[in-house]
Amino acid sequence: MSCHKCGASLRKQNGCDGYLKPERFKYDPEIVIDKCIKKIITRQSYVWLDAFDLYKKGFLPNGNSWLNESIKFIKIMQFIDVTISEIKRKESKER
Image 1 (spheres, rainbow, N blue to C red):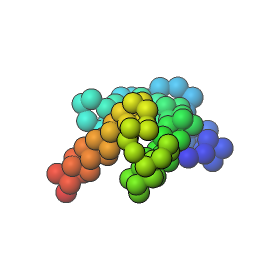
Image 2 (tube, one colour; image 1 turned 90 degrees about the vertical axis):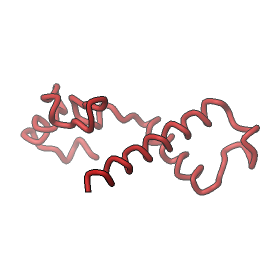
Image 3 (cartoon, one colour; image 1 turned 90 degrees about the horizontal axis):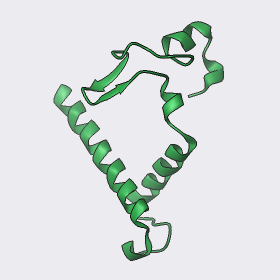
């Protein structure tokens, strides 16, 4: 996802410089994105997704026990896990 690769027409189509019609990126009634996804996903989002990948492989940032992890870390990992599971469930129903 590189802003530099989008030309003027693609930037307009993807809502990079403004807002889109809500139907452009509508995943379900609760998830409607009305602008370029790059504007929503932050660098911190990527850090959490990288941490989630390591978490799924059994690596924890502060050792080998949940007691050593912050509540914030645990809640974010749970949120990402549930969100991915919901997306996979919805995709399998659509097939």
